[in-house]
Amino acid sequence: MNRQSVWQVAALTGLWISMASIANAASESEHVHHQLLSGDRILLGTVEEVRSAQARIDTGEGQPRFIPMGVRMAKELPALKKGDRVEVTLNDQNLLVDVHLVGESSYHRVIDGQLAQPLVTGHDVAILRTAGGKKESHFIRPVARSKVASIPVGVDAIFLIDELDKIVDVTFGSKEAVHRAAELWAKKTPLKGNFVKISGVILAPLSNDRITIHSENGTERLYEVHPFAQPRLLKVIKGEAVVLLVDQEGKVTDSAIPPRPSQLDQR
Image 1 (tube, rainbow, N blue to C red):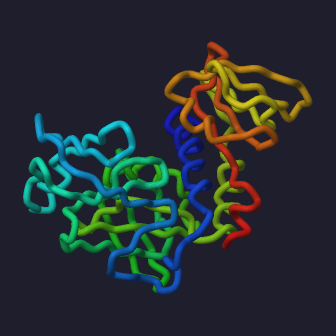
Image 2 (cartoon, rainbow, N blue to C red):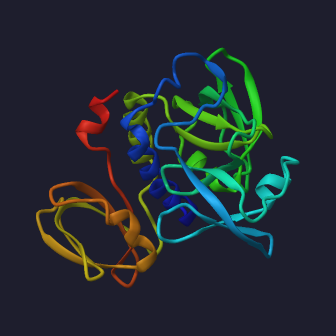
Image 3 (cartoon, rainbow, N blue to C red):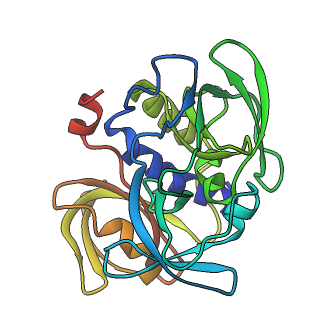
């Protein structure tokens, strides 16, 4: 498996975590209304400043969020200005899905279906087969490309489509789909190159840039974690299963965290 495939495996984690609830998205094959996927959330905020094609928005989180103005320009929506009250939609990985003025008309479409074929080079276009058997082609917003790339062809999934008919988010269609995806990735060629996959159970959660696991071969291992790989591991607790991707320096460069049983049981 090449390095790109390594990141596909890692991206699978974000989709696993979002399986706590599908939130009525699977009640019909398609829906057209204010629809979001499980794990998505909306923050209310106020535009504090607009500069260099970015809007600085106070959402009450302590740190402002910077939203590119191009997100609205592409939809031919009015530019944001200081003082505007906005709704910022984020996915389960805390990345921007959409931004609208409070009260502004908007819609998203949810498609229940599968990837009909592997993504083309660049991961910017997806061919979907809907639950009704139709094929549709959609561009993929950059924020969603790694998540869509982690969905194996033929596995049930739920795709969120924005006003420009682009895919902005995706999650698995059922807990059975999660297991099916894991089985398909397990059959892939073992990781090669500078990465080693280490599976185990957390003995000591992340602290001082380090994490300790009890590996599958029965040994206790302590690993240093790169700063960019730490946010995901901050969520895990002692006793949870984890898969670490370790580079040639022996440091964790990414991780995959299977869903907790309680998350899947909520389906």
